[in-house]
Image (cartoon, rainbow, N blue to C red; front, side):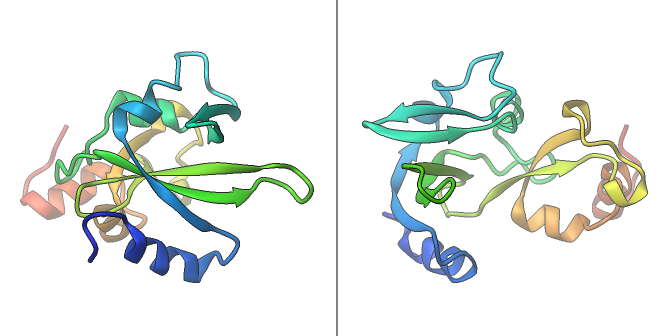
Length: 152
Protein backbone atom coordinates (compact mmCIF):
# COMPACT_ATOMS: atom_id res chain seq x y z
CA UNK A 1 0.00 0.00 0.00
CA UNK A 2 1.28 3.47 -0.86
CA UNK A 3 1.71 5.35 2.42
CA UNK A 4 2.47 8.72 0.86
CA UNK A 5 -0.45 9.67 -1.30
CA UNK A 6 -3.35 7.27 -0.98
CA UNK A 7 -3.42 6.55 -4.70
CA UNK A 8 -3.57 2.77 -4.20
CA UNK A 9 -6.47 3.32 -1.80
CA UNK A 10 -8.12 5.41 -4.50
CA UNK A 11 -7.51 2.74 -7.14
CA UNK A 12 -9.52 0.29 -5.03
CA UNK A 13 -12.29 2.81 -4.33
CA UNK A 14 -12.24 4.22 -7.87
CA UNK A 15 -12.98 0.77 -9.20
CA UNK A 16 -16.25 0.95 -7.27
CA UNK A 17 -17.12 4.53 -8.26
CA UNK A 18 -15.50 5.43 -11.60
CA UNK A 19 -16.82 9.03 -11.38
CA UNK A 20 -14.37 9.75 -8.52
CA UNK A 21 -10.90 11.15 -9.14
CA UNK A 22 -8.08 11.23 -6.60
CA UNK A 23 -7.35 14.83 -5.53
CA UNK A 24 -4.99 14.47 -2.57
CA UNK A 25 -4.60 13.93 1.15
CA UNK A 26 -5.34 16.50 3.88
CA UNK A 27 -4.59 16.36 7.61
CA UNK A 28 -7.56 15.70 9.92
CA UNK A 29 -7.54 19.20 11.48
CA UNK A 30 -7.50 21.06 8.15
CA UNK A 31 -10.86 19.53 7.14
CA UNK A 32 -12.45 19.37 10.60
CA UNK A 33 -11.94 23.10 11.12
CA UNK A 34 -14.56 23.55 8.37
CA UNK A 35 -17.14 21.80 10.57
CA UNK A 36 -18.99 23.70 13.27
CA UNK A 37 -21.67 22.60 15.73
CA UNK A 38 -24.52 23.68 13.44
CA UNK A 39 -23.35 21.80 10.33
CA UNK A 40 -25.94 19.03 10.43
CA UNK A 41 -27.02 19.52 6.81
CA UNK A 42 -24.81 19.18 3.76
CA UNK A 43 -22.95 22.42 3.17
CA UNK A 44 -20.21 23.34 0.74
CA UNK A 45 -17.05 24.75 2.32
CA UNK A 46 -13.73 25.56 0.69
CA UNK A 47 -10.33 23.92 1.14
CA UNK A 48 -7.40 25.18 -0.96
CA UNK A 49 -9.87 26.99 -3.22
CA UNK A 50 -11.94 23.87 -3.95
CA UNK A 51 -15.45 23.24 -2.67
CA UNK A 52 -15.68 20.49 -0.06
CA UNK A 53 -18.83 18.53 0.65
CA UNK A 54 -19.30 18.58 4.44
CA UNK A 55 -22.28 16.67 5.81
CA UNK A 56 -23.80 16.07 9.20
CA UNK A 57 -21.83 12.85 9.62
CA UNK A 58 -18.76 14.97 10.26
CA UNK A 59 -20.22 15.76 13.69
CA UNK A 60 -19.64 12.09 14.53
CA UNK A 61 -16.00 12.27 13.39
CA UNK A 62 -15.59 15.52 15.32
CA UNK A 63 -16.93 13.83 18.48
CA UNK A 64 -14.65 10.82 18.05
CA UNK A 65 -11.99 10.37 15.39
CA UNK A 66 -11.07 6.86 16.62
CA UNK A 67 -12.68 3.49 16.00
CA UNK A 68 -14.73 2.69 19.11
CA UNK A 69 -13.85 -1.01 18.82
CA UNK A 70 -10.11 -1.15 18.07
CA UNK A 71 -8.99 2.44 18.74
CA UNK A 72 -7.58 3.08 15.23
CA UNK A 73 -7.28 6.86 14.86
CA UNK A 74 -8.39 8.81 11.81
CA UNK A 75 -5.50 11.16 11.06
CA UNK A 76 -6.14 12.32 7.50
CA UNK A 77 -8.71 12.68 4.80
CA UNK A 78 -8.45 11.24 1.33
CA UNK A 79 -9.95 13.92 -0.94
CA UNK A 80 -11.84 12.64 -3.95
CA UNK A 81 -13.01 14.92 -6.74
CA UNK A 82 -16.55 14.23 -7.85
CA UNK A 83 -19.52 15.88 -9.49
CA UNK A 84 -22.27 16.53 -6.94
CA UNK A 85 -25.02 16.61 -9.59
CA UNK A 86 -24.76 16.77 -13.37
CA UNK A 87 -24.13 20.37 -14.40
CA UNK A 88 -22.94 21.48 -10.93
CA UNK A 89 -19.33 22.34 -10.19
CA UNK A 90 -17.23 19.57 -8.77
CA UNK A 91 -16.79 19.28 -5.02
CA UNK A 92 -14.23 17.35 -2.99
CA UNK A 93 -15.52 14.35 -1.06
CA UNK A 94 -13.40 13.83 2.07
CA UNK A 95 -13.07 10.28 3.47
CA UNK A 96 -11.50 9.89 6.92
CA UNK A 97 -8.76 7.30 7.15
CA UNK A 98 -5.86 6.27 9.35
CA UNK A 99 -2.16 6.61 8.48
CA UNK A 100 -2.32 3.16 6.88
CA UNK A 101 -5.32 4.27 4.74
CA UNK A 102 -7.87 2.13 6.57
CA UNK A 103 -11.18 3.94 6.08
CA UNK A 104 -13.14 5.13 9.12
CA UNK A 105 -16.90 4.85 8.76
CA UNK A 106 -20.11 5.78 10.54
CA UNK A 107 -21.69 2.78 12.27
CA UNK A 108 -25.15 2.25 13.75
CA UNK A 109 -24.76 1.32 17.44
CA UNK A 110 -28.07 -0.55 17.23
CA UNK A 111 -28.18 -2.01 13.74
CA UNK A 112 -30.89 -0.72 11.39
CA UNK A 113 -31.86 -4.32 10.69
CA UNK A 114 -32.70 -4.59 14.40
CA UNK A 115 -34.77 -1.43 14.52
CA UNK A 116 -31.95 1.03 15.26
CA UNK A 117 -32.81 4.60 14.21
CA UNK A 118 -30.95 6.87 11.79
CA UNK A 119 -30.20 9.44 14.49
CA UNK A 120 -26.98 11.05 15.69
CA UNK A 121 -27.20 9.35 19.08
CA UNK A 122 -27.22 5.96 17.32
CA UNK A 123 -24.06 6.68 15.27
CA UNK A 124 -20.44 6.04 16.20
CA UNK A 125 -17.06 5.99 14.46
CA UNK A 126 -15.76 2.58 13.43
CA UNK A 127 -12.96 1.56 11.12
CA UNK A 128 -13.99 -0.28 7.99
CA UNK A 129 -12.57 -3.60 9.23
CA UNK A 130 -14.43 -3.56 12.57
CA UNK A 131 -17.65 -2.32 10.94
CA UNK A 132 -17.47 -5.15 8.40
CA UNK A 133 -16.83 -7.72 11.16
CA UNK A 134 -19.66 -6.30 13.30
CA UNK A 135 -22.19 -6.73 10.51
CA UNK A 136 -25.74 -6.52 11.87
CA UNK A 137 -24.76 -7.19 15.49
CA UNK A 138 -25.42 -4.51 18.06
CA UNK A 139 -22.23 -2.86 19.33
CA UNK A 140 -22.42 -4.50 22.78
CA UNK A 141 -22.88 -7.92 21.16
CA UNK A 142 -19.88 -7.33 18.91
CA UNK A 143 -17.65 -6.19 21.77
CA UNK A 144 -18.73 -9.17 23.89
CA UNK A 145 -17.76 -11.45 21.01
CA UNK A 146 -14.38 -9.70 20.64
CA UNK A 147 -13.48 -9.54 24.33
CA UNK A 148 -15.45 -12.46 25.72
CA UNK A 149 -17.35 -10.14 28.10
CA UNK A 150 -20.30 -7.81 27.94
CA UNK A 151 -19.49 -4.09 27.54
CA UNK A 152 -21.82 -1.39 28.92
